[in-house]
Amino acid sequence: MERAISLVLLLPVLSCEMQPGRVLSPPFDEVFELAEVIVLGEDPSDSIADVGEFFERRDGGFVIGDRLLPRVRTYREDGSLEAGFGRFGDGPWEFRRIRSVAELADGRIVVTGAQSGALTFLAPDLTPRSMLLVESYVPGTVLPFGPDIVFGGIGRDMYAADMDGLYHRLVDSTVTWSSWNTLAASMPYWNALGRAHATVGGDSVYVMAGLLYPATILNAAGDSVGTIGTPPAEFRRVPELEPGALAFTAEEGPGAQTGDRIRRLIESFDLVTSMDIVDGNRLVFTVGRLNPAKPWFPFEPLDVSVEAYDRHTGQKLFENVRLPEDSKVLGGGRYLYVLLSPRMPPWRIAKYELLSG
Image (cartoon, rainbow, N blue to C red; front, side, top):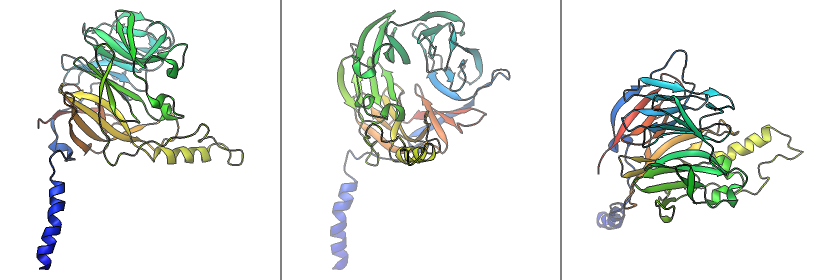
């Protein structure tokens, strides 16, 4: 009799666990198949300091901005080095740091990071072509959008909260629309703790504050046409802080107390560290945290897991899929590109195919 009661009690639990529509969290190798691992080629006189901004090119190669040096480099599909460009400075063709890189529809490479805030256009072999100072805006993230450009950027003479939107469509040299704002831009400290992310899929632009779900979907006219993305149940939302919450008092003294307070804060929440389109149809969020060992700006994001959506239907395909140990998601395209052992050379990039179904 006791056994019969146990079975009856167990049946609802099993039924609940097997409900259709439940989001799975399988091991990484059940979702992604490793295509190959490539090693980035290096010029001994122009060594990579740290792998930063990444963009897959149409020919299967890619362009990478150095995270620490004002250098842009292009690579073939096998990882061999093609060309390098950039030097530190405030003049034409010089950069303070590389903020974004992309290949445009006509093959040009566009780079942001000049002190002037100009867009820098390079030929496919990275020889200088032109520079464009966009009136009223300082471009950051830059994305090809058909023959045009969508860029993220704040105004030169205004606060982000005063703008019509944080993302802008550039047609030739004219901004035709500005769209999307986020609560994160107006919350104390949140701008420093998390970035905004954007990616393009077809004729849609996906934009998101890394601290907040969901992502917003913009159409070609810059109109918001929906949202996509739901946080995993374990996702810890960033706390809302009052201005001055992290300032030290005269009794505490500077330095150690403030550092401890910030460390406790960044250990308390999760965030989306990147958002990428993989294989045309899948929108992949990388979820991570800030490194508590670096409790001062600029903070270091650490990638932990990925989740994916069908970008056409919005269906969540999986969540909490743990990334390989000590790895960093670089970007999407034909593959999900993952940097292995991201703190030291040789710089190895794994190409992962997202398995259908």
